[in-house]
Length: 262
Ligand SMILES: O=P(O)(O)OC[C@H]1O[C@](O)(COP(=O)(O)O)[C@@H](O)[C@@H]1O
Image (cartoon, rainbow, N blue to C red; front, side):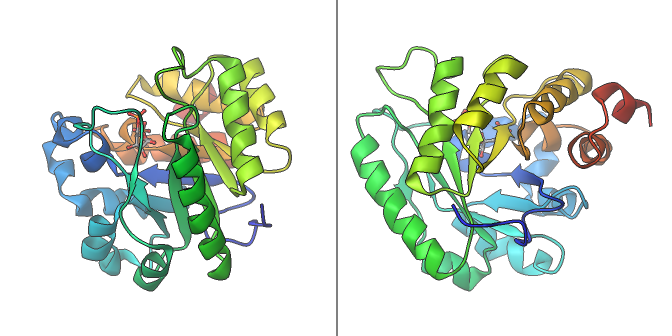
């Protein structure tokens, strides 16, 4: 872990990552109800909102669309990723190098690690190489820390999520991105397990404005320093309205109720 408060992906100690790697991870199906969002430019436009401190995308999207937004959006280069068609034990191929991501203009690196998978050993080695290369470029590393695999029946159990955030600290990430473990107490346990490292909550599938903002509020109160979210923002008809509210909950620590009333 390195100090990241001065990084462009951190604002007042907090982070809001807008993720849009779903075209690879889940396929075009995630865009079925919002077909206009299949055009990555529409989501880059959303990422220009002040609340968003970085946009997480894969290589092809970064190469094709980031150059038009480099003055307004910070790039989080998601290095690895797998399609939904992969049927083996959880694994993720590395699709671009840290050197190339830095050349494209990355402000940070993102890397998925599936602890518990039969591929854990290889994934840890791959993460080591990426993390050490990121240090050479002075780029913060965000670990998508997702325990997953045939031995794990429930990947959001409190103990599992606390283990996930601790693994990110142990392996040298600067931010752990973990799923919400179901209660503020369990999220607090996960944040404590990460020591001084920043922990952000992973968004998940779309829920109502209130339900989503309340969960973010609970996560922030539990010690999370922000959010990495995709579908709960860009699958909405009006992502800006939700980002306005998220800005209040994350940076101004307002309640979900107050943020929605404003
Ligand atoms: O592996 P899962 O749980 O299907 O979700 C993976 C997706 O979730 C994210 O980590 C966050 O996006 P969401 O907020 O839409 O869940 C994406 O970066 C990724 O594509």
